Image 1 (spheres, rainbow, N blue to C red):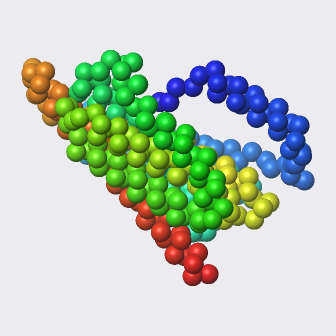
Image 2 (image 1 turned 60 degrees about the horizontal axis):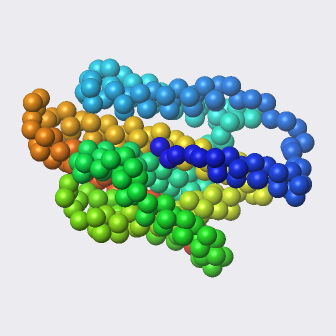
Image 3 (image 1 turned 90 degrees about the vertical axis):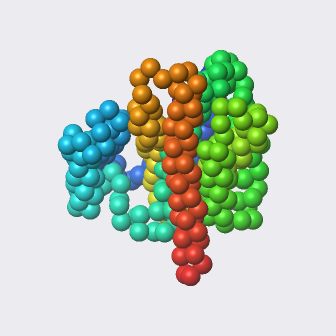
Length: 304
């Protein structure tokens, strides 16, 4: 999980002050009632799905308990969808997801954060347990990732003025997928300059996706519903964050459990590298789906 320092609180405080001073007040003419059934449905769906993913390595992916949890998550999702379709003031108007651009933005947000938060979790294990780095050295080793993100993010705003957001999202997904495939080919003794290049690629990929996802979601909706679109994209990021750590971590854990008790240190290190590779490959698959979603939205948009 990314570290949040005092600078983050300062940025939020500055944002609140500037918003109060320069952004005009706006509110709905009629306040929306709380959609308690919709909120309950989202909570049950995310909680049961996450718990199922976390428990699966120990219980078995095809055990009755795991299958029951996955079934409960599916039922919660179905019930939530049915409730929202009937609600006069739904938490999420699922009909809006019929818009290709909005659906692509939500899918890209979930998949990008699933891949990248899973990567951050697995990469810490790889650097510290497989390569034997201390926590401080492991943190320094991954500095190219946030550095590339910091450089790419400001440039994306300029690119959005001249390019469709779907193109940037697709390019970001391709960069993330290529980076994770590169890590899936790395071993415990891979030369650091190669890892350096991969971390740069991953940071640039995330930078290419983050802002265009919100831009695509907002542009897909009428101006009066821009806040709804932005909220959907933000919520999708949070869901992807939770599922990324749970899913990629569980896939790696399942592989590690096959290592016999009493194995040598070298054997355990090799097993860890192999387990992490499985998580990276799953993240690369998620990144490839980002490219597909972006391309489909671009194609559908061009045919209008």
